[in-house]
Image (cartoon, rainbow, N blue to C red):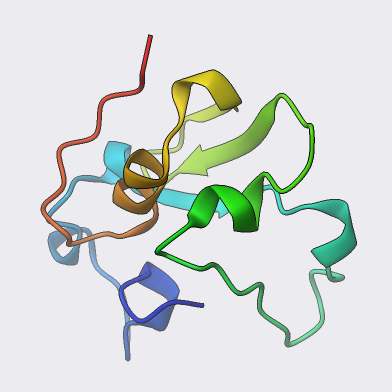
Length: 102
């Protein structure tokens, strides 16, 4: 995990802590198959926040499945994403304005 990711916050995470907004913060992210762990294991997936595209989309895949804290689920296409966009979606209080590329 990264220091500024929601799961790294000590204690409980409240919606008030998500100053970027629940619809701009990813809660669940599909990881590359090679890095997947059984959900019951106490193990984390490490994301390089400098280059999150390399962490989450290392191969030729078209995109990733994600769920936001507002409850929405979507498939984010690689062409819509950049390192800056992914970092903004991964952090909950970074102050980034996130707009997917068209």
